[in-house]
Image (tube, rainbow, N blue to C red; front, side, top):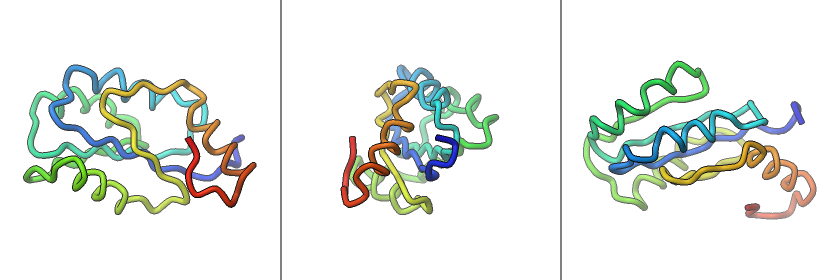
Length: 119
């Protein structure tokens, strides 16, 4: 599946320090490697930001600290607007995904090109 399309994964974070490391690790460990991950902290959050920092060593990951709260919908809308790839999905700050999750999503998009949403 190395020729599968590129995907952006948006991770909205609000007071997510308890779970964010495990969540980001599950994204980092995906079998489909051709991804970009945008972490959007919904307002300054030093504890969450600190836990995200080690993942920034991976060039596929970047973090943005919103200067003030956007709220859940605003943060997700902001993340979606950043995607410049054919595919995008939102990964909640406390959701763990199977190692083959992205690969499986992309496989289904190839099997059903008319689908508007796959999950």
